[in-house]
Image (cartoon, rainbow, N blue to C red; front, side):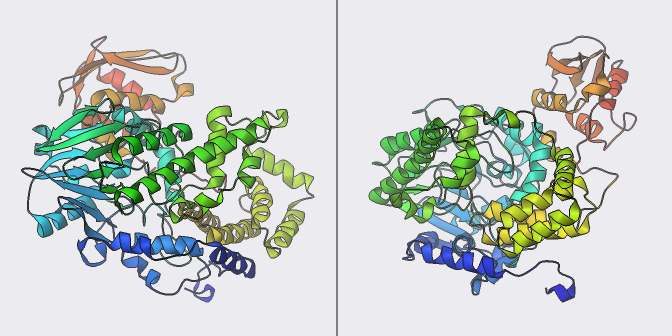
Length: 621
């Protein structure tokens, strides 16, 4: 769409075209091996991987043409690899569906049925993948599910491969120890803010075209179907633990605090197949994910890759992962694991080396470069994580957000700082003039920074919003990282066209709240309690869940919500679903099936709980 037709988006500037040409000239030689690996074992797909209402590759047809200057040449290559979709044979008995979501779903042929590894983000594409493998490789029941780790794109689609009856009768759902706590912490306790930031990181609000969302680096993007959090019923607690699932032996390696707080690799001896979960994929991963999450331990990450190399590399003829494409052969597997290991160890060690010289996070991020042996690999490139924000993550892991400079200990927040910057720089016109000068010079980072102060000082300043959007857009076009591109372009889009305010908040994580165990559900309510409103109130009652038979003593004091198994105070009876409806505002106390003398106390508590709105502002106050 052209600007004349009402599209505010711009084309690449001469500075961006020059930057893209420089990237193209610096890339490793492409021998086509990755495309061969990504296509190997293809068995079939469905047209455009189209899953109505949840997912489709159809909008990415533009990747079959020539690369436009609005897309980084390196990201373009990764986007074309991630556009390959369908069912692939990893080795006889091991099959992957790729390109139906941001993650892969893997099917292991057991004695009676299919063992499913990582049932995607949502139910609809997971069900479509199961239908595809059944059509092409045998209509067999699902006899077990394995979650490799605690991120939603590896468990959220479980209701697409298991029915409520399957879950009730105890089909094994295997996960690393600590899985549920980690999943709840990330996707429920911090679910609203993280979901909003994820709309930036994964480009979910952007058009899918050469000036919009192209790829997430990790995969094409996230599906938008039904998400559920079903607790595992089998826990992997230690490295070397072996389980037999539907006649298939699985040897596990626990890898906590790597790519996720709870994660595990595992080996299938009878297939010679090693699953590296999301610890080794075909790019540099995040040590800190821009959507927001706990900082990851680069040193531990490298250690566990090295341990996997020692434990399994000599026994594995194929290595696959939860994203991207496999590696075949002992020597290629060893080489891949060794360089992935050294990638994270190098970032860790060099960041701390420079920190010990007195450099702070941004200073380290500006100068950190990979050594030639790592820089020469495609699978070490910054398609998802980047050297820049990963260096800052290592710094934060060890030293926190404060760089030691007392001027940065208690800085003004963005709106207050913005007003002061505007005044100090001589007013809006002076800032806009400097911003335009920097833009014309191709210094888009400086344009975005200084004009951003004016936006936060006066978000109605249309010229400032437009200029900052133009700068962010060019930075997005130049980005090799899919998430960086999507952050920049989503920011530009929302500056140009702010989201309309709504009187009814859209609340994230409601679907996962409904499937939480009762204890975790009550824990999730504690972060909704408005402490100022609670003040000096004391509330106490017993909640009796009619669907599980569990009872919990619930108490509010000192503006803190506590709960523990047992009874204390008047009893209120209701199902977990009714409690979720009350918390989210879907039902009133009168509309819900609530019984017992404790109902009034429950009503007092619900009145003190915030309802989070997903659509809070990010790029403006």
